[in-house]
Amino acid sequence: MLVLAIINGTVRDLGYKKYVDELVAHQISTITLLILFSIYMSFIVKKYSPHSGNQAILLGLFWMTLTLFFEFGFGKYRGNSWEKLLAEYDILKGRIWILIPIALASGPYIFFKLTKHI
Image 1 (cartoon, helix red, strand yellow):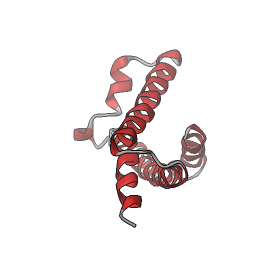
Image 2 (cartoon, one colour):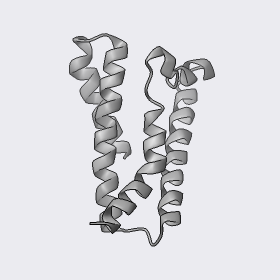
Image 3 (tube, one colour):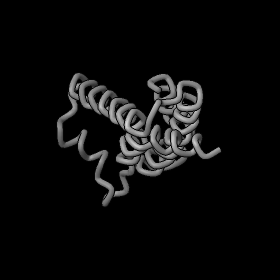
């Protein structure tokens, strides 16, 4: 998932970011990352199916936790303030990044349930 996130950010920074304002670039990037993560989670859940819904939930929480630790740890390492890091989650200001940890936490369970009914 880290590789997908890096590719997604690179495409944003070297591609469309110069044509739209920063908030729109952030929103586009978040949506494309949600799509990429969904494809990845679907593949992983199909290939290495969790044994239960609870195991799928634990997998999602694990992915979310790793992502948040990396995001905030790397952000602090780069010298960002907590205020700046948390601002990415302010949905009232159009920052939709909160959808990423929500998708990571819930995605494995959703795909587990979908694959069990197909």
